[in-house]
Image (cartoon, rainbow, N blue to C red; front, side):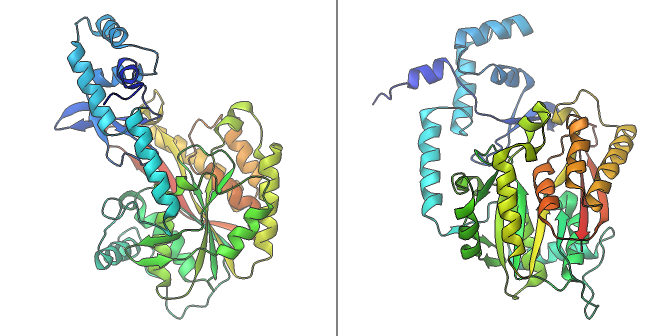
Length: 415
């Protein structure tokens, strides 16, 4: 059987939007390729020469064009069989825009649409899949050397309006999560946790909702469907249009894990909200509040939050991403980390003061040079939360030993 368009796809390959970063495999310099949508869960590592070819796969360059470009750059002839092998490898991992990928994504979307639950996407990779081992893993972040200790039993409970916690993987940010969730564990608690998460893939509208319960190794957490549907009905757009983005996005899943660990059998529900990027607004030099669609959506969400008793907002947000891995020319050094820390803490001061617009303008003046990944959920939280003050509980940096990249993150509490 011949598929129409298949020949064109092979002759003029087109790579999907991908993330790339330098890495080492068995002592060799390689380039890791990651699918930000999670459709391909594996990280595919290729030689720098192969990555050069991938950067040229935009749907316009033929195999001959790729050969010619390779010859110009490296001075040697690359056989067409080698390029075809690379294309086949990429296609097998759904990293190319092909019929093979389109058929696969349609099936995934249909399966997700029909599912009643959002299955754990990172059990066994991002954290322990066995419930007992997972609980031990999480307990270690509280009781470890950098941890704050477990929430104190019998301590006077304080009202808490919200927290900021990282969404970096647990192995790098576990202690920082624990500082934020210790504050939550020692609070009077809430019936509904509104979780604002960065969406690492583009959305058509400012926010994406889902009604699907979240299933993890620690059980199942229900969404407060009546509230979500009521607010969705007032928005000037359909927040369920990008519901599929929830399938593989980790930013909400990681917060659900910590909530389940802390709250155990206590009844609570969630309102999961993925937040779209502000990248285009940063480039245009405008505030999200200058976008009528965003302004209306925040106003409707804020009004809805005020009508609800016993709610707690959670912003799932990392901070700076610097170094060659994130598009910078400068290698990460102790001096670079010190400068980033100073900027981060100055920025977070606006968060503690609940000055959401000043928080955004600080980043805008820099042109978001530090790549603040958690900007959209942080900005939304600062505009939605009904709090008197914020407190920075912990600031933390992770950096690659080779200086290729660094990520910063923080735990905060609002009362």
